[in-house]
Length: 576
Image 1: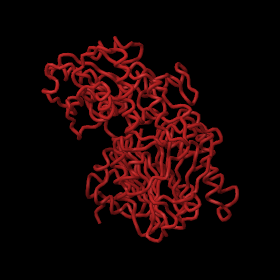
Image 2: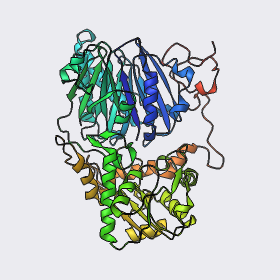
Image 3: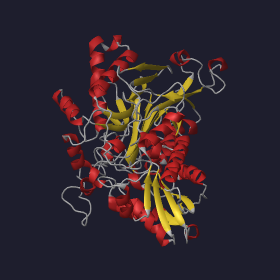
Image 4: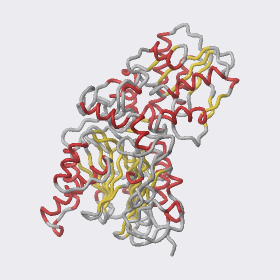
């Protein structure tokens, strides 16, 4: 799961760097492993990426070099490939034109794509599926260019055709951005609409008021098709980034749709896949998305209120004579559901856990030992809220059970009489293959266990899960009238994969071998080393583990600039 954002400004003298930085900051919850940004200035690309949080990757001397009125950004949470900063995004290829990609999601036919690319002479340098998306698009755009010649090329039609070909060759759940140097910004969403993507705009000073309604949204799509440098555009994983930057949300990118914002400031859209069915990932609403985001017309906050309501009604059905004294959320994601559950149960809502906001989200932290250790660092109890009480703890979901077990024990240590536990999501019993790191059934606490066994495993008195039908109804009941959800990607609950994979086939065996905790820890430590001895020494030719595009051999004046990958002859963070 990653966060992506792209901007194109009407004024060529303005720069997108600060807005991309701010946008990535509000998308930081989607990925904390690495961050990157590339901007285009007069045909010159400037790139900075590295492992770490957004605030740590971009320093002042980086920002002043990231000039240009067009750019894309990415914050990474690795589910494919490794955590090497060489796989931090955006990724770049110089031919044709100079193309960069920022991608959220996961491809499920990577071996087939890599083989096809290798056969036609394309070099694949990493294990990242994002690199495959970049090479596929580059190859298709090259084919479109050679077919008619560069002078006769209609770039809008060529881009729509190229992305359409990419969609025909790829399987999985993905949303992405291409920056095509000198031509514009491209956004696309997989034919099932599994991963989210939204776009918006704002008026430039030259725009007449007649083009907009009272909310500042263009009255007709034709106004965007012929904007002629009068609109600024943004496209993002979540609407919260659009709101924060002061843009107006237009709508979600539709499943199988391509959005092209050209350098003249016009925004074009086209359906690039004939068989598209909206099947959004339901786990976005449960956990990943910020509550102030709107996805496919549904408020994440309101959906979580519904989850709490339906969860409380199930508790009343199963335990009509319950002895719950207080409802306490597990910060932060479950707070909304817990608030509504407390209201329906007619019990007080209390904050019993205080979160250290400077600790990463435990679910997306690599390694079970790291997750277990971080729980006590992340949360502390207010003992008065637990002492002598029967407490109902509400969490958004229970994945491996490591965090839940620690939290239940913390509640007992704080003096709770009884500890009940409920999940706003159904039992997670299957891997997610579309960009969420739920790779192997053996790591899931609900796999081959019933609720009584799970309660015993995490140490609580009883546990209640949301029903899958109720969870899906939460979104259906909130969907706008003009939009209906025919299905969802709820594969981690049901084992039903919208792209056709079947549990038990060879794909899942390979997934387990590549992405279980032990395999990830081994890749993290590196070959030729072990956990006690520490990481293996990086190759001498690598740049802090990164392979820089530039061949500049001058000595860096700052250590933190060493992993910068400038796509320019201008020195970045170098002694002059």
